[in-house]
Image (cartoon, rainbow, N blue to C red; front, side, top):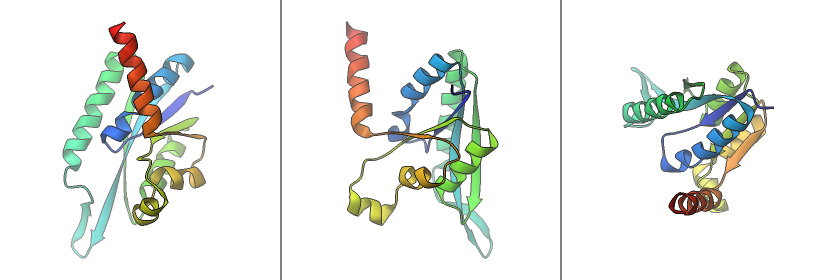
Length: 155
C-alpha cells in the first residue's frame, strides 16, 4: 500500500518520536523510507543563511539515523530540501512529490491554538498542500508508544 514513506524531520526529539511508527509501517508494507529535512534559508543582500544555527549538527544526526535504518535492513535515503521564501511545509510537500511518496509522517509539538497562531504549525500547513495522505504523530501518542515499548522490552 505504501511504497514510499516520507518521514519529515527537523532533527528534534519530537520528530524522532515518529520514527518508530515509520519503521513499523515500512516493515509491514516493505516500504522505502525517505527522511526529508527542510532547510529554510533567509535571503539577504549578500546571500542566504540558514535559519538554524546548528544546521550542520542536525544534518549529521539525520544522516546517522538514515544509516541506522539501512543497517536495520530498510531501504532508506535522506533528502534535504532547501528553499528561500518557502515555508517548511512547502519544502516537505515538494520533496514528497519528487520521490512519489504514498504517505508523509510528521510529528507535531501539540501546541494550543494561541501558540499555533504565533508560531505556526508545519503539520497543519502540510495537511493543506501535501500531494498524499499525511499521518500526524502527536506527543501523546509518542509517549504512549514509548511506554508500551518499554514495558514489552522489560517484560
